[in-house]
Length: 93
Image 1 (spheres, rainbow, N blue to C red):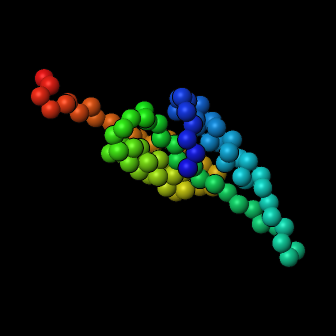
Image 2 (cartoon, one colour):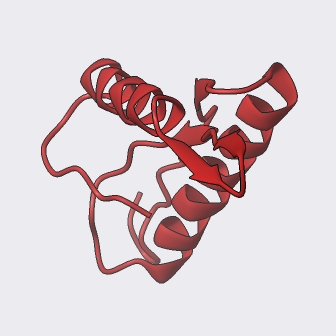
């Protein structure tokens, strides 16, 4: 997990794609073979708060986006479709 502070999703997607590209450019020679690796990355945005449920939801959204990226193919980056709801405090109208 990489946390990028104060960054919009568009910029974070660019950072994530550069990271995926850097990983893809790495190769490991071993016993006469050249091995390449790749990375699939999921990006989710959220505003930090003390609400653990929102934190867990954001992590779950990023995880789902990562699996979406894996399904799309090597070196992909996907943004989460994370929807938050504003809960009204008890007693508020």
